Length: 316
Image 1: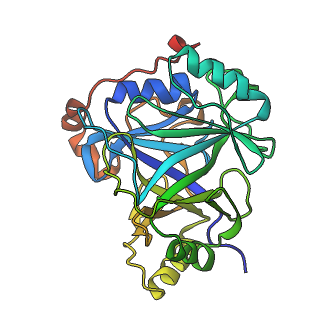
Image 2 (image 1 turned 60 degrees about the vertical axis):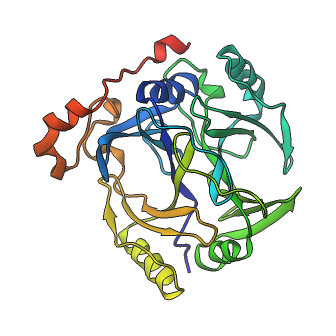
């Protein structure tokens, strides 16, 4: 039987200032802005999507920028670090680049035989770059970062939990994940164990609950092929006692949501139809795109949103 879930689809975070958010992920990290739209559940807030050239599932980091939002805090019940994949030869380049923009970085950490550097964005969002040569994806660059050093997409994500047993059972028995190994209290799971599907659990048994706001992850979405496979996993989850939402149309994919036992919000999102349904591939992310139900309110919505500009030329 083929897998219903094939890895990570996207990860969505809460941010503060929209322009600073755009500058960091396109300018400093070099991700492509593949879609500029609104939070469908809060239409006066942007929803930015950053990824590779086409916003391929497994590369897309998305943000809800709330102007003036206070900083959240990392803690138990949260996805605390989002890891991106870079080539091994790119590690020194990224350490130099981040230092150039006065971003404090960790010394290289050793994890499962690979080197990792850890840092935060301006809102305190936890980010890691994992240097490896097991990623065949192309990556993307606006030209401000050499293509051979560019980020290729997600490597994985770290869940900070007070207990792992029920979450592990969910991942391995219902979501097509398998246990890969443990190292220094870090428990690793994957669908195939490759960049783009890794989920790590770190235990924080006595830790304080995280507080969600700017600089924290709102949810992690996992990939499923299409609407048919999504309905199968929805039924499977519900039959096993999970409280799963109805299917929600997010224009570029269909979504269902539920809380995993440790408190992290999980989403299952379809690979189809993708981000090119309302913009040419060469012009993804250039215009504010609205769902059909919001178009009659475009003038009001645009008036409520801060003006933002793509400034990648300032981050050579």
